[in-house]
Length: 390
Image (cartoon, rainbow, N blue to C red; front, side):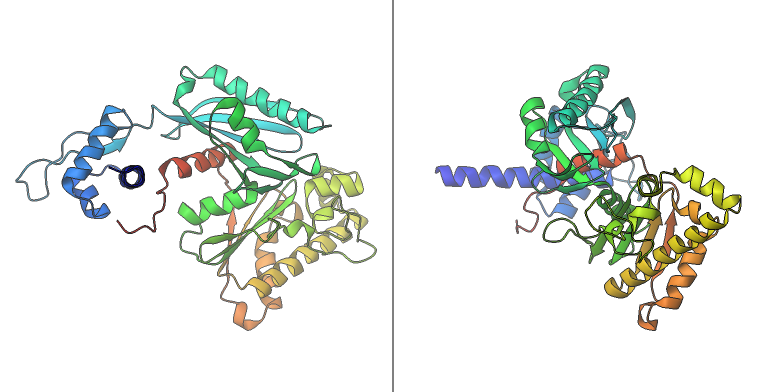
């Protein structure tokens, strides 16, 4: 067999095995017969692949099940051996790195957090990240079962290259985080912006699963946005698409300077970090003043509420999504009924042709470390070259 043919045969074998593994992961329990039907592979090919996966302890067999007809040979269900493999998920923010280890049955095995007042240099950031990873690895009995490290980043990333573009706490500084950590730990590393990651998770199996075109908006410490068109995440030419926090929402006298260098950005007053930076007040202090009826704070609160309404209305008009997903701990700050008010006011502002949009409010968001582990799982079980006709 020529080298080219050998390489082609090896690739084909890998794709076939990954197809089988993907189905076992996504649809388990599943039998060998069902695998053959759904993959289009011969039963002998499926049997060979399953035997290899069983030998490597990647999968296990369940209890034999009788057929619905009650006759014939019992089918043996195949399941992922999820307790044997694990991954690290890390939430990276401007003040900390918080991580956890989960096995492939989504059970948390370890957790660790390292805080930093600020990152003075790139090495400061890397030191905090390494410290978290080392603490996590030290807590699990068998680090060889780790399959990768995923990051949910409160900042801009080039996820295809694993590069931090706007690093938390360091501003615009390109850091090839994936390569640096892969070289050090020998594990694949995956990065995604936190709001993009949330949107992807909700589109794949959450509240947005039935939606094709949607926008996710998170108002919390910062303001994040994610745009999905025809089930594909839109990142833009420089990975800034969806950065709603820098939508120019405020006019004088409320057009405060933003850390991005512009003025009047939505995040300067509508996020907790923005309130603290702009006014020197925490969101708790601001909320308390509103509830106490302080005239100046109540007036400013209405200015911010209106800015959020107009921002969302313009986004709906521009992108024409079928769903808008709202989340974040800052939403209740603007009033207990603000989400309902926001929906009503936006619908009154947008053209009639855009009023088919549905608003969803997500109050319970999955832990970001778990979402980050999802990046590893997607990679482990994805089908390479799945458009290839076999």
